[in-house]
Length: 333
Image (cartoon, rainbow, N blue to C red; front, side, top):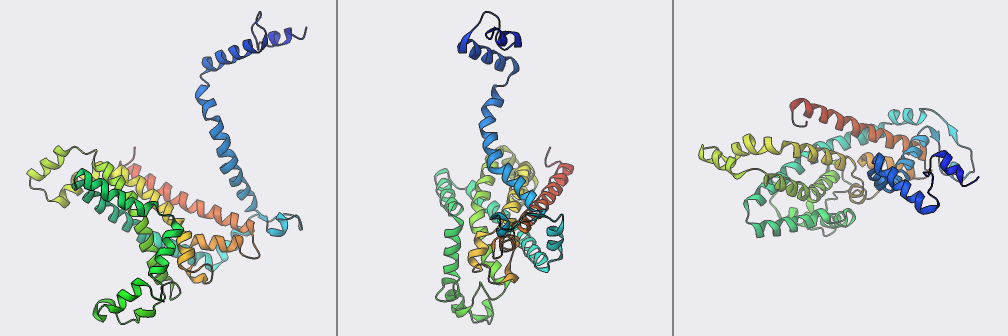
């Protein structure tokens, strides 16, 4: 009687028994409904849900709560406070200062990275094969350098006590570098402009190799006959690049621009090391500001979650606006 239940339910066809028949039926069912691709990506989806989706849900929940170290340890109960965390953020002048520093930094660094990477990519395209491989490999070493190591290196270079940059500037004529006493100039603590000048140089140095290699790969897809025809017609290298090369690789620039904006908005390690930590709130970007509000004593995980959501929303607005304008212009289809 019990053996007939699977047959009555339609799980195993009549006349077939045992695990082998069940496996055969499952294989047939998967092939019939074309479920194999979904089963293959199921472990990856489970991992993404566990590692990314569940923490994201927790952040969203915390952003509407008064949740700190005491609530995490069970000393005090969790309180739902609605949009109080978001109200506190928008009323804080430090948030608007950090947002302004972040936006200005991105407005300077993103174009600089794209320009330097494009110039290097064009130069690599003009080199021979062996030299191009050598130079691109050497440049990628800067991109592969861990942010902590690169930040410590630049901190030493711009250190007021024997740093290479201050020593070199002190040896230059005043008409070229100004009348400041560069021998003891402290780039990290003088003001936000000086600190983020160092950070901008560091970020461009680490980011341009990726742009250069991407541009080089895009240039390799352009038929040489087009460039040769433009040269025969008397086009200058700049006009040839602007009228022929750039329109063909414009979709690549869309991706590179979006990645650069996201990366440069998320600068934390470089700014934390170069500015010396959280000592000066006037030098906070959004990364430092979120870290300060979420984890410094007393920590407020709810406020940190609200800040993270605001940060993501800003990036989504920037990304959506740029993609929409690019679609209207025909750069992305």
